Image 1: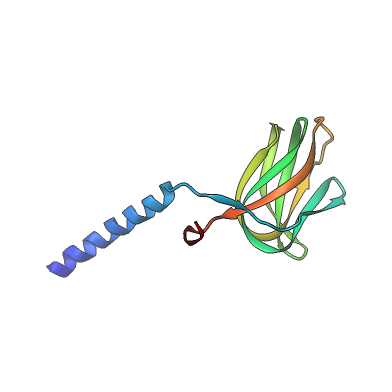
Image 2 (image 1 turned 30 degrees about the vertical axis):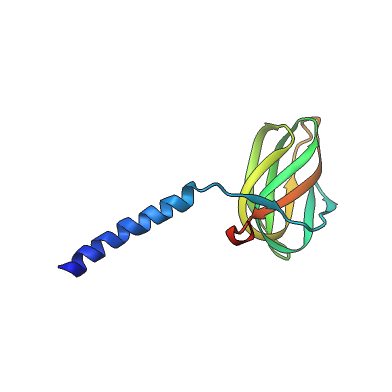
Length: 131
């Protein structure tokens, strides 16, 4: 009987721990690596020297930028679409993702809008032990 009660309480306890983790505020830390920019057809690739656990990307620029796609590099020549932005944005603009990557690609298939992206910052989540 005691084992049965114990087995019933385990899922309740685990769900409470999981919910507490979901509701804790995440602290983002800038990945301190130089960001290089490479123009491509209809877009730009922003990359850092080595792969990192990227959780947030911050776009910095001027004007109103609109109708673009954000992809992250999975392998050397393989990209995964993470976000499509249909409307216009104002800077700075944050994109929350979860990817182990060293580059993002911003594709702008149309020339609408008067803005431009000047730089991209990569962020990760701070470890509790580091704080």
